[in-house]
Amino acid sequence: MILDKGLICSILIASVFADVELSKDLDVRMDQINLKCGKENNFEKKDFYQITHNVPLTKDEIKRYQCFMKCFHQTDGTIDQKGFVNFTRVDENLSMLKFDEEDKKNIIACFKKIKPVIKCEDVVPVVKCIPQKKKLN
Image (cartoon, rainbow, N blue to C red; front, side, top):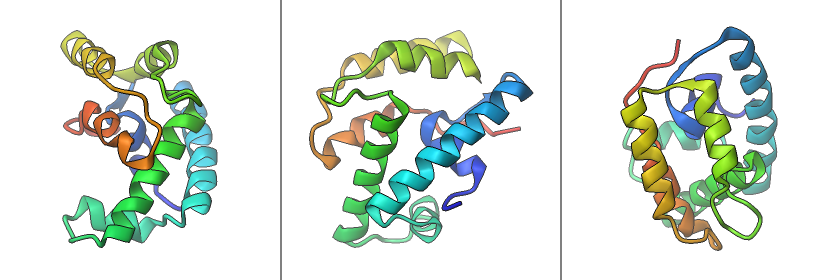
């Protein structure tokens, strides 16, 4: 596995799992996506460590991270293959995670403002819509 489970889930939507059964299913799905996108974009655990620990990144590292995130969200189905937000999938993901209603409303409102994700750098607003304030169980 390229990233640990806590980091994988925080990539999708950082929060507390609502249900142990769902979290196991989500972990398996995220592991598969993580491996696929990590391999396709040469993005490894050390790269994510740099991002989460505010280590300055090269332009190449930033590009690989953005391409990893684009692949991740497209493979997960949050972003469709044409680059548009799939609100059905966003709702499904939010239902698997504990967010208060205010957070859910803010996430959906943020996603509604996102332009199509065509190039890797277009994924930046998607990542910014995902709150990073909650801790995983």
